[in-house]
Amino acid sequence: MDGRIQRIYIPMTETCFYILYCLQEEMHGYNIGLKVKEMTGGEISISPGTMYGSLSKMEKDGLIRFVREEEKRKFYIITDLGNELLELEIQRIARLYLNSKGGIWNGTENN
Amino acid sequence: MGQKTTKRLFRFWTIADFEAEEEFLREQHKQGWKFVKYTLPGFYTFEASTPEDVIYQLDFTDTKCKATPAYLQMFADYGWEYLLTVNGFNYFRKPAVAHAPEDLTIFSDPQSKIDMIQKITCRRLLPILVILLCCIIPQLSIQSQYDDLASRILYGVFIILFIVYIVLIMHISVTLAKLRKKYQKD
Image (tube, rainbow over all chains, first blue to last red; front, side, top):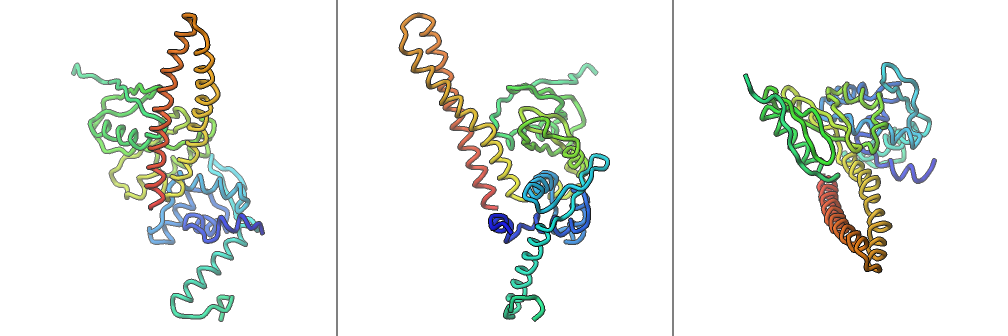
């Protein structure tokens, strides 16, 4: 993986994390916004300007790719690179969480 | 009956004053004047309507063609009414009632606001600086070498332009820097 991309995206902003997480399934911007609101109990909302800018940036960096357009809505899905970054970030959060409970990290979640 | 149904106002804003402009449009709508048209350098047209608290938001996309149907559809899905595009700024509005505060902004994280400020700096402020350095300043030195009337008039014109540019550039730089600081703190 490109070191530059990793430096930009890890640690990940919440906006970026939730978009990548949602795009494990094919979705369009507004639907991602709704799903994020629902899964976070309304704590995180991603506004349209932020959503549009983030999707464009992530597409340009190759984390997600455009799949199709339906009724003027663009659908995206995560790429291999995006999956790799998402996995790295999930491991990082797992380590943080484990450490916050006083645990010792052995390099994987299942220790 | 017999009441004015439209009004015109003049306000001059620079490319850095979009937040003041949003507030201005909201105030007008609260007083029953709905924004309909804006022509550079600052002519606003309003239409009489019911006083209402309506949030106005500006997004900078540099050119109008970047406000694609997919882009506008996303804002529409979120309940933002697209009004018009002037000088690369797209104007949106949404009634404040019945919406949570987090749904009344088009930018939910400070980084996307900083990205927009960055875009304005690159696409608008830098070109103005280039015109100052490559056109106005050289013209000043060229026109000052001649003594005929036309050159003196041109010299005067370029002096005025020079002062206007310096004032504008200072104002824009300071305002954008303040905005950047404000959002970096968030």
